[in-house]
Length: 355
Image (cartoon, rainbow, N blue to C red):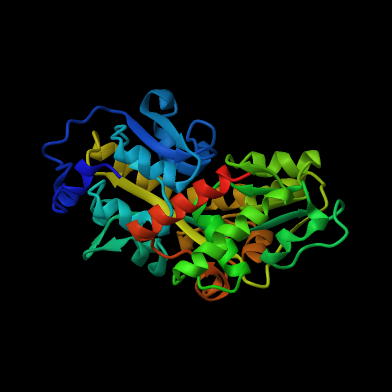
């Protein structure tokens, strides 16, 4: 973490981009996961992309990240992003470091359709800092035709029968939580002794590993090729694509629980065009936009009014009509402290560097 950011008064988080002071530049730089580009998926932001269809590539540009740790680092480096799209366990770190500004929800005509529990996750110091957009799972995606036994628990990843054919997401946070669950630990209340056991257990997994994946397309390509029999940390979009293409796959509900996440957009403290940023945000949470995202990737939409537009089989698979899907039936990611972030990143670096 940059020292200069740590020394910034927290008050800057609320005044870093005063609307009267910001100079509109007519362009947005969005720090984003790959696979959400407005130029490739205009249906995800329909009102916005329809309005700017003639010059969309001039209005929106992207910088990409592979995981939340990289996104935070890029924001700390001051890359000039107007909007950033991290997930809920990282949101408070952005607020604490003055990287985002409060969001004026009165400027979002679709705000009252956002699921209240998700909205509450983005509130800090009595103000709304993040607009929840999508939610989903992390689990094991399995080519059922290539394994003798389909794993039904996170601990099964260590089974020698899968040696050389397991791909895991290159994410310190996910692998820490996954391994803690496999060992029977509470991932957010681990002792120093348990952390050491998690590190050793991850090192012991290496003989089973084919590779670490980082881009969402790899979670599809690796099992499609047959090289990976199991992809751990996979999101349900990979399952959707593989199933629709005729592959024999399963998306496991581990005994220890699927991991659950909520992601959303934050408005940079130094956004150069607030009017354009709010226009984009409101379009992103419009009914038709949210339904398009759900139907394409099988993710849960934060806008509950969009559900009648979502395909029935997606609603059934995601349990979108069950209010407690995330809070009661998954291991939902919790906010990380700065100490936890550093410790887990350091542990993961040690694991990857080990023989």
